[in-house]
Every structure is written in structure tokens, then in C-alpha cells.
Image 1 (tube, rainbow, N blue to C red):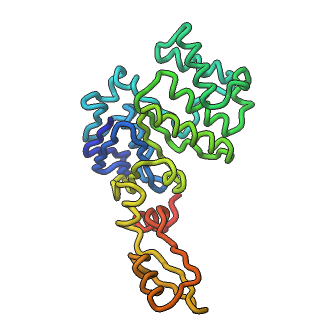
Image 2: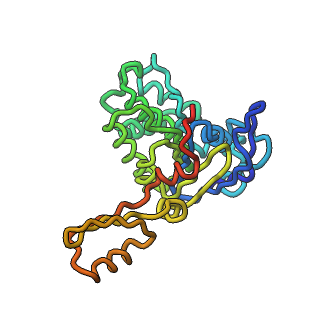
Image 3: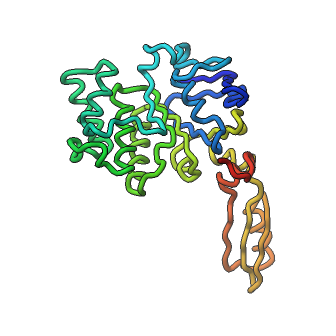
Length: 281
């Protein structure tokens, strides 16, 4: 659905994206993880044609360049910085954005109704956005990205600063979009979101791709050993191992194991292993 080939982007002396290559498959949710300043937002900007790479190539659906407005119409973006007019109502915002995409009349009315219902804002459609909570604004931001019925949707930190209820609603919305056959790119700092939502995860830092795969593949390749905690005949065992089942069988062969649990490496541990623990401001 989207191919990034050897993308490079520099701002003065700062290299934001440094030879990044990545392919997004149709119908998948691809997570894009990285610390602050890793190049995620710059990558998103180039992927939707808002930024021009210094070198490299962006191809949408086998050949189109998102810098072409006709191609960009097939892409939806919910940016990290909310793109809403607070003096307008939720409904007025969506009518405005729909018209920008050339949707009008009964078709626009139907899409606005459907988008508001999809994000759970029908009852607040007439309220000014300035009266919305942060979570409601995030959901309206998503609705604005869907009015033109795009094939590819990019969500840049879509749950930043939202309450647990709105966060869960957004998760449901994202899973529903995938069920409809949409392709999504999802940038986040929250590892549990990537674990729940993403088919594959790309970890980037300093503009480079460090690792790409399913969560299980990343943990297996970069997470290190699991820890088996077990109790046998009143004695406690703590064993670091790549094969917890084999170690458990070894313990059980010497006597009954009364209880055990396995502490598996997490995506967060993989992330910190690859990007380091130093603070990023």
C-alpha cells in the first residue's frame, strides 16, 4: 500500500530521517515507534506528501506519489497537533473538511453523520469544539481524517492526553477500520497500544530503521531471556532461560513443582534495548 525507499530529510545540521526504507502491506496496522526526535513525524509528513524528501522515494499503491493531490485524496491523516477549529461545532468542522475534499450535498451529510456516529459524538455534534474534552477532540480529529473515505490512514500519536474511556473508544474505532479493509500507520509512545493493535511494529531512532516485525518476532530477536520462577518442595527457583518449558520439565523431573510462572520479555524492554535509556527532550 505504501513504500518508502531510502528516504532522507535534513533540517540544517539536524538529520531527521536517514536512509529509511519501509513497506506497508494492504490491510495491516503498522506501528511506528521511536523516542522523541526519532523522525516519526517527519516520516509521516513525507508519507502523506506534506514534506518533500531530500532524497529517496515515496510510492503509494504501486506507483503514485502522495505529493500529487489525486494520490493524496486516497490518504487520511489525523495529526498529532489537533487540526480543528474550536469556534466551530463538531458538525461544522466536519462539513468544512469534507468540502475541502470536494464532498458536498447529500453525500457530505451522510458522511458527516456516519463519521460522528463512528467516533461517538452524535449527541455533541452542535457543541463548539472549545467545549469538547481532550478525548472528544481526538475522536473528532480522527473523524475529519475519514470523511473522504481514504484507503490509507496515518494516525500520529492519536491517544496523546486522552482519558481511558476515549482511549478505549479510539482503539475500537481503529480495529473497526481495519475490519473494513483499511490500512493504517500508527505512531505511539505507548508499548501496550502497539502490542494490542499492530500487526507489525517498526522501531526507528535517529531517522534509521532499527527493527521491524511482529511483537513476538521483535521480542524473540531482541528481548533476551525469559525468567522462570518456580517452587518445588518449599524451595524457590529463578532461572533465566530461552526455553522456559524445557527448564520447567527439568525441574519437574526431580520432584513435583507446586507453582510456577514465566516472566517474558516485553516490547518495552526491546524498545529500551534498541534505543537506549537516556532521556530524550
